[in-house]
Length: 143
Image (cartoon, rainbow, N blue to C red; front, side):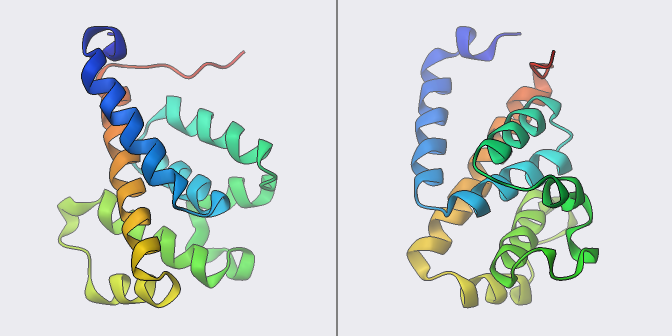
């Protein structure tokens, strides 16, 4: 199903929310967060799109390839990126329980409150987009 065609007002509102949230987050961190949430949600469309965007923004192949194992990748990711990825995983997997205090506190150590609010909004927005794409069987545009 073409969600944008069938629910255009909802889709436009969601895209505006996503753009607004993303605008307040460092581009490198934003791309890593969007790829990782999309991996966790099995959203092939979004994994493809954000991987392409990350490459265009200068992200390295190694960091993209190892994102599935970011915790085991040593110092390949900065402490700030690791804090953002940990928060992404816990917000994306709320069925595992609430976001643990230590994960939130680590993110709060690396992001001031306005940055943290934007990061949380970005994580929520990419999860929403992932869920729509997965639910409607949106396929990646690969050739």
